[in-house]
Image (cartoon, rainbow, N blue to C red; front, side, top):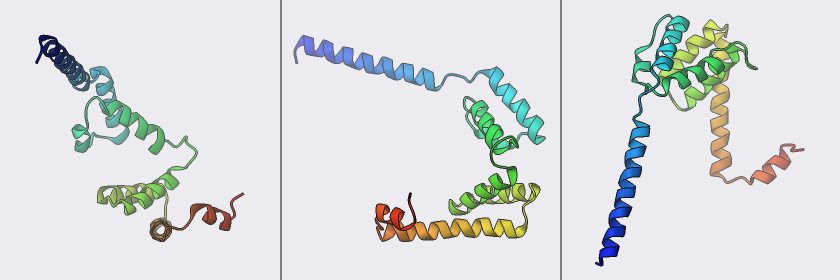
Length: 153
């Protein structure tokens, strides 16, 4: 191998190592402690405690994740009322399936005023959606034909 090829190879390796080092530094950069502490305090205030599973979430991501949950799922100032959001979440959780979410979403739905009948219907609708999705996809139903037959405008 010529000297110039060795030098280019070393430079390329050094560049890759430098890039890898920068990426590692960026990915392992500590979270803004003030943002993290503020999120923990807000969780404590909102929920009456900090569930232990949140301590397993990356510190850098917790403030953003909490802000998203609080702004969408927990807020009553969104387009969907809390009961509807809980029923949607329960229906999705039943399909994933996620026993943690099923339990929690059922509790949330009941606290938001959902009846047992509404909970049962939400889960049944999710089952119907899964059923028909299996039929449409498995039988390769033509999507354009489907839209026409179902009244596409």
